[in-house]
Length: 308
Image 1 (spheres, helix red, strand yellow):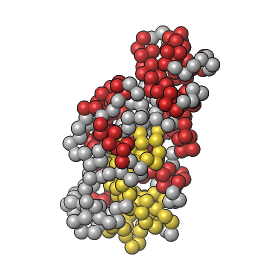
Image 2 (cartoon, rainbow, N blue to C red):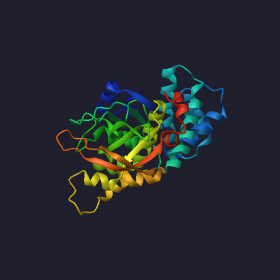
Image 3 (cartoon, rainbow, N blue to C red):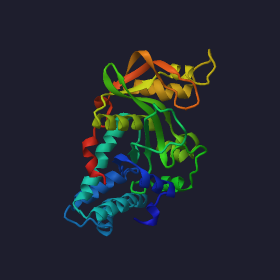
Image 4 (cartoon, one colour):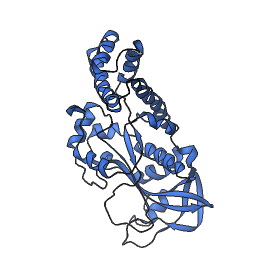
């Protein structure tokens, strides 16, 4: 892969230790994806080389800027094809991204490339019941537009809880109503909390992408339910003084996320300890939002074999 596509070393560290469950290589940069598909389909028997793609694109794209954008994506796509040694895979790679674009739009976001790390390294000492530590990460093998690549190289978060992560989650495995369930306790994004505006904009919608990716992983592992505590319960379990309003950010992270996915309210009679930090007292939560992983999961999970 060329130097222009290299991400920061923090991405390499994640790759080397990660337990990768899912990878989405989203080849999206303005109109580049559609231009590339049109160019490749204009001469399907032409070799899947960067030079051949440039010839086809130059014949149909009049704008110099659009041509440059398409060639940036083409460089990455041709590298993937060359690495795999399958020239016929180029159009499959592009069509997979067009399908993912439909899915991202259904989630209400632009979309981005990511690797779901099922067992991510999250810094801190946590309670024994915190058995789920997952993250969406960047990777050197995935495509990002030039400005995003440059921003990722220089980005140093104020609080780097999970190196290389776009966002991360802590949770626990339990049973709710007799069904296996992953209970998500803490969702955060260091990139969108302290990163430059271009990164915040590029990774906008990370909550919805994270939930859908986790639901897909959970469903593949035979876990039927995904649960999120109500924001008010999280506030009661935290340092928010009694009688104070629940922070708007927490309402977005918990209640709004549940609403966006159509998750239903559930009362847990015994209560579950949602405290993640080891030195704090247990914090029982009775109010959750629950959804079925099959309904929340990525609809394109079966096509992940197309993306490297």
